[in-house]
Length: 456
View: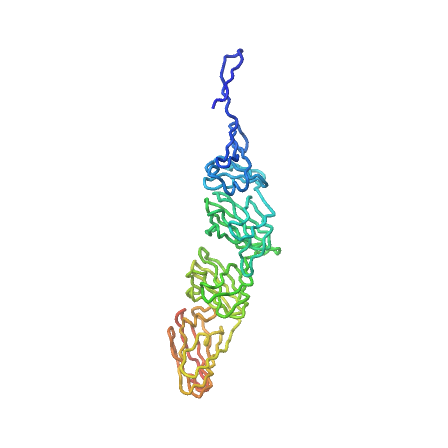
């Protein structure tokens, strides 16, 4: 637009010259706050655009006018003076960090410095809304508070808005796990931004954005130690809970230690979704066996066993659960309980319970202590119920079972669903019989007699 026309002296022919408007200020149409200066003769790293400082609140909640302006550069009005640009939906860090310079080729000599911030205090509300907003490309969290006993949900920080090509480093220098949330609806490793992901104590995680709206992490589940050895996420002092998969205590660590286990309680493994190769260790230091289920609500199997059944982990034992494919776990576990002695006081025909014939990983003795006045039958429990009561059962495993009785009348063991009985099933009066119990599959088993006090 022509502002003023001037004329040269009479020494030369009259020639009008137009003066261009040198500077235009852009303002937020809602608040009136300046958001950029446009200098048509500008040179240097910002070209014709010169950033005007804005507040952190304006950056986290930009106006529609700011989002619509794809040319302006917005600069935080306090250290580290981070610069942002609009991608049309949110404000993202400008390319090249604080300088805002896109690198499109050629050779860069020297070192490229990214914006950095230290001394960050994680937000204590443990929600996305209350998390501390990160504003630099390299961020060090130095202060956080410990999560509740038996959990890993800690204080939180929230990433800045995603942008294709952007990478953010988060160093958790505190002694506690922290939760890292996405900005708005941005996902992290597929998890909703409002849920976030856990960064363990003393860890360094790099977040990469290949497409706006989605972050991928590197180094999330590992940390560093003064010994130089790699660490993984621990969850300690766990209390097993519930009576089934839906009410079990949800595990969130790589190494999980159960401290309290009432009879019949359980825990649930982490999700196996997109987690092939995941390994989770569960140690039961409680006073009773616990049932280990897949992730709450999932239909995963463990050693081929249905989710609602799970597998039992003896007290004092450690199980290593490996996810071989989404929806499928295997467990390797050795129980310290090699042998057990159980009793049943029935005085007439009865159905034996799963607890009667399980409990020892190698050897089980069942004492029929009731005084039956006539010959009686003891029906086996179903194979399915026996599997549910066994310590980490697998197809092909076996153990020895001895049934003894002191009555003057004999007992006879009879079949139930899933069983194949081979050999004599009679328990002699005031005698015993030995069997081998073999798991043919996770639904069928064989009871093979191998000898008795009567010699047959």
